Each structure stands twice: as structure tokens, then as C-alpha cells.
Length: 153
Ligand code: SF4
Image 1 (cartoon, rainbow, N blue to C red):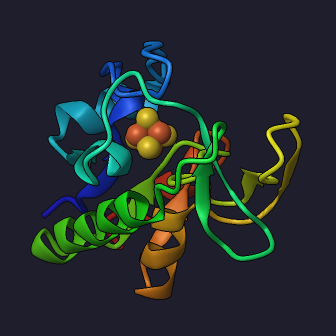
Image 2: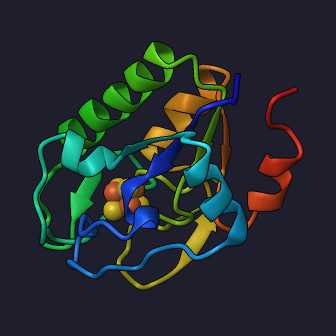
């Protein structure tokens, strides 16, 4: 049986991003995996109760809280979304996730530094971190080929 992959809903062209922008990920592997019915899609921030559009949010590097650009604390919603993502993985026996890089939820190697100065630092978003801790390997649009080498083994 094919490995299922947890995927960020925004990669599939769904209108879930904070600014309502639709940016589908175009890649032949994505098309193939869609045809193979591998994807289980989630937007952790929507799953956590946030809406579209919403204010951009970043993780404060001092206390770990997730704050919007006007200072609203959305840590709880981000944590709920992460838990729901993990629950989906467990339900579908998912070992791999393909999530949007640099997002405060989905980023797997980079996140914004919490100052809203458009500065990225090494780090993981809330959902990526929880999945990684649970043994799920998280990939991004930059490492999609690496994911392909691991499937169905
Ligand atoms: S939380 Fe993840 S799935 Fe949702 S819009 Fe942001 S990057 Fe995409």
C-alpha cells in the first residue's frame, strides 16, 4: 500500500493562507502523489480555529508564544492545530509530512524570528515540531525529492 503524506492545504491551492493568497505548489511529484491518492490535507491554523484572512503571526523567541502583528496571543490555536495534525497522522499511520517552509505552523527548517522584520532564523513551526517529536519526518517544497526517495520502503 502507498504511504500517505500529510500535506499543507495551501500547497493544494486552497484559500487558507493568512492573507487569502492562493499559491498552489506545482511539481510533477505532487501531481503523481495526488493521482495515487496519498494526501491527507490539513491547515493547522484553520484546524486550530483561526480564519481567513487573519493577521500574520510569528513565534516570540524569548517565551515561545505565538503572537500576531498586533500582539494577539494565538498560541492556543496553534497548539490545537498541531495536535489535530498529529491526530490525523496517527489515524492514517502517516510517517511523512510535506509542509510549507517558513510558516509559524508548518515551517520545517526556517521560521520568522518573532520581530515582524521579515527575518528568518533556523527553527520549526509549532506543527512541524510536534510531528517531528512524534517521529514523523517533515519535508518542505525545498526537499520534495528527498521525500520521494523514502516512500513505500
Ligand atoms: S498554516 Fe500551514 S497549511 Fe495553513 S496556510 Fe499556513 S503554511 Fe499553509
